Amino acid sequence: MPRRSECCTFGCMSSRESVATALDVLQITAAALWTLACVLAALAVLLATRSRRVPLAMARRLWAPGLLAIGGVRLRVIGGERLDLSGPTVFASNHQSYLDVPVLFAALPVPLSFVLKKELRRMPLVGWYAAAMGMVFVDRRRRRGARDSVGHATALLRSGSSVVLFPEGTRSRDGELAAFKSGGFAAPIAAGASVVPIAIDGAGRVLPPRGFAVRPGTVRVVIGSPIPVDDLAEQDRRTLASQVRVRVGELLAQARVPTGV
Image 1 (tube, rainbow, N blue to C red):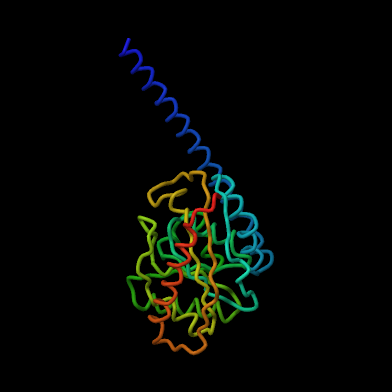
Image 2: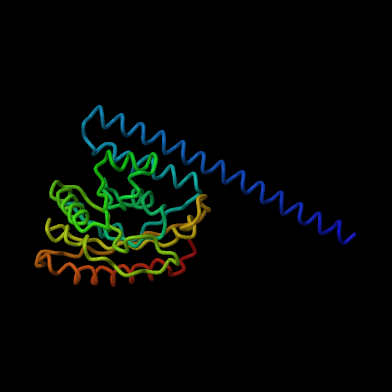
């Protein structure tokens, strides 16, 4: 009898695991199909209008909310009233997960250009879309590549676009804030664009760095007050990076305060 009970228990566990695996496959398939449909629609609009503004708005209003809904992700945005949308802005955020990109698309009410690792350009669907939308790709192994990316980001800001920067340079493995790289902060200084610190919490739990399927949960985005750069020169970028990191750390602590949501 004990053996039969154990077998029954293991059989039940196996069934639960099979159901979970099947649901993961369905979710990943749905997310891929939704992304494919949105990318194709955005590229069609880009070809028809020769403007990136509408396809970027589609990412904010269609792709990102739909992708979060497929994963059962609830988004809570705190501090949106601090946003000044009168000019281009650099949003500097911590980086927990691949989910950070759709989270910020959905959380911020402006078309966004992201600074991304060069390797993401080769990623099917998302990489194609990012390249077509003129996103900034950084090759950190080449100094000239880093300078080129700063020039690209500066040009975007001067043209009126807002840019998202992940100063840690890669996703956090433990959810804690890593050191900030200062190179990207040369762009807002050169363009005279204010820097808005942002903290994301929860994205690393719903989509861990080594995971593929999204687990239902809440992601909090806390938006800080703009940091002006009017009196800064290019050599002050390390000071600016340090100032922004301190502020993002404060916002991250605020995001982790239990609220019952």
